[in-house]
Length: 219
Image (cartoon, rainbow, N blue to C red; front, top):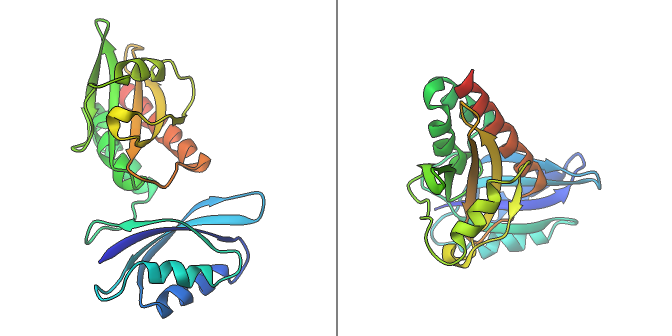
C-alpha cells in the first residue's frame, strides 16, 4: 500500500539518511522524497512517498520516526496506487504545451503537484460566481457561506491560506488570485481533506504557478 508521509526533521547533514534508514527498518520501501520547505530555524519539512506491506500498520512508521532526535510526523495518509511525486517543472511543462488551455491544465495539475484533493478556478460572470475549471473532486458553489467566502477570495491580492468551510467539510484551503485575458479577475482555490496544513512555501509556489499560467494564456 502506498502512503504519503510529511515529516519535520533537523536540516543538517545525515538527517535524511537516518530517516530513510529508520523507515526502511520499519519495513517501508521509499519511492521518492521531496523537500517541501527549509526553515530559518534549522528545520526541514519533507514529503516521503513509500510503499508499506499490507501486514504492517502505518503506526509503525510514526513510531520509527519519533525514535529519531528532532523528528516529528506532521501527517500520514494513503496515497493513490502507482502515484509518484510531481515536480513543479513537470507541472509547468504540462500547461505551457498548450497556451490557450493553460489555466485549464493548471487546475488539473495542481492537485497531484501539491498533494491536494481538488482544485477549482472561480470567476464572476455577469455578477454571478462560476467555476470556470474544476478538477473531478472539486465541490460546488452551494451551501452555507460558500458564495460569500468565494466573493472575498476574488478580492485577494496575494496567495494565502483561507478558512475552511462547513459546507466543504472544513477542508483546508489555499487560494491564489490572477487575471484572465482582458483583465477579468479569477482565483484558484485548492483543498485538502484532513491535512496537512498548507505551508507558507507551498502557498508561495502556488502563487508563482498561477501567475505563470495566467501569463502563458494571455501572452
